[in-house]
Length: 295
Ligand SMILES: C[S@@+](CC[C@H](N)C(=O)[O-])C[C@H]1O[C@@H](n2cnc3c(N)ncnc32)[C@H](O)[C@@H]1O
Picture (spheres, rainbow, N blue to C red):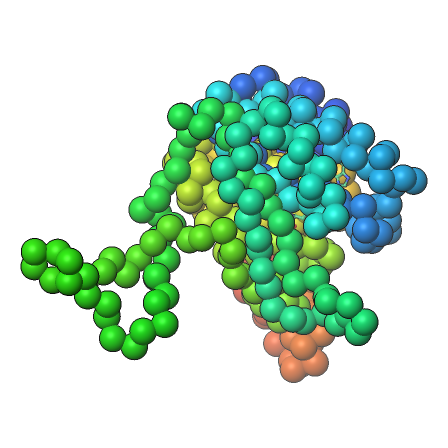
């Protein structure tokens, strides 16, 4: 296990169970956990599939317990898994925390389409707190437009002076955010990268500036990246070298890792469109001055 980064943004390169055990109890304000889903995804050559569902769940219960232990008494915990495992998480966690919302991250239809059943178009997220009477929830920071379906503004005629209904509200429990696509600026080479927009809502709602946000399965470090952008501190844990490199680069914590310069991969449409000189310029724009041309 290796600790990288700085005081504000720590990256722990190692196994989540081991890394979590090293953190002080009751020390984290917000945890976002997006583990492997036990559906056979390939994380840089490591295929995440447990021998049995029981084995997967047994492993999950271990890190879920550790997350609860590390969470402050007024902390919040958002956790994801595949739709088929979420009922187990729900039953396990409801005895230990208060589950305040069962969220649905609903997305568009790209990707493999089911032909003989209804394709999966959402991922579930549980939003839990340790103390339902004392937790951070910054309503004002996450308001969305209240869609009424009406073209004109709705007026509340029951008021003494007729007033326009408030056009903003706290989002409901179905969240629409597009998945991260290859051509999007935020795209990184990872099979299950979560969108910045999803983490922005969670971090704005459930933490304050200066708070500590932790992600035990960081992948492309979206959580820590957004935490940094929003003035929070972060701890990100990740097993794979390739993804540690993305985290160090995205959070601007290092320019190299194990002697290798950290630079964002150029995507096919970027190389196809550009001459070699342009490609080099693009590299420099994206990755800063540490990539030097010898020409
Ligand atoms: C679903 S992905 C997380 C994606 C992330 N939320 C993002 O936005 O990119 C799960 C990540 O957990 C990592 N992982 C798997 N087993 C782990 C373990 N035992 N300890 C730490 N990380 C692990 C995988 O390498 C993978 O990057």
